[in-house]
Image (tube, rainbow, N blue to C red; front, side):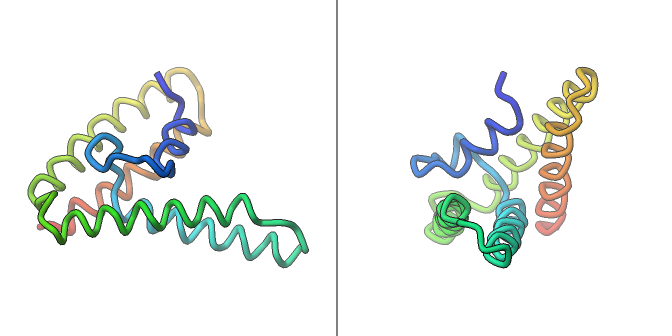
Length: 125
């Protein structure tokens, strides 16, 4: 079983497979905004932000890849919605595991993704 952190890291890898590592566009959008804010804070402190810049680039690339797959019809909106619902169910189970094992940091990451998934699923209605 991967930790939430390991799952999150695997989502920004350049070899991400959209169907195997599906993450919502909403979640990536929120993570991109957080990353931009963190980069700005580091720059304001005069710190190096190259590590975050690479992460930002890869997350943006993955978000665009998902959107392009939907536009091309490789992933239909209906299949995308089904995948989001499946991911939501997996994340709910994972959140319970983290709650039982008192891993609050991991649980908060998964819970944030759950909220994003719920918003994105609701946007299909």
